[in-house]
Length: 49
Image 1 (cartoon, rainbow, N blue to C red):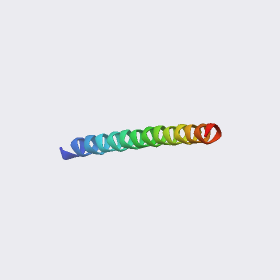
Image 2: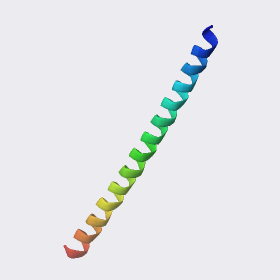
Image 3: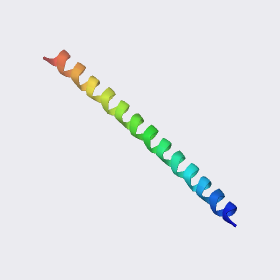
């Protein structure tokens, strides 16, 4: 009787873990793009200054 419930819990845990992994990867990608843009702005300021 508990086996389907346990299977459902494992499936929900797997989906949650996958969602967290995707969220962190998107967050890291956005952060890297932001850092890259900041470096470009610094280079432009250095060239102008």
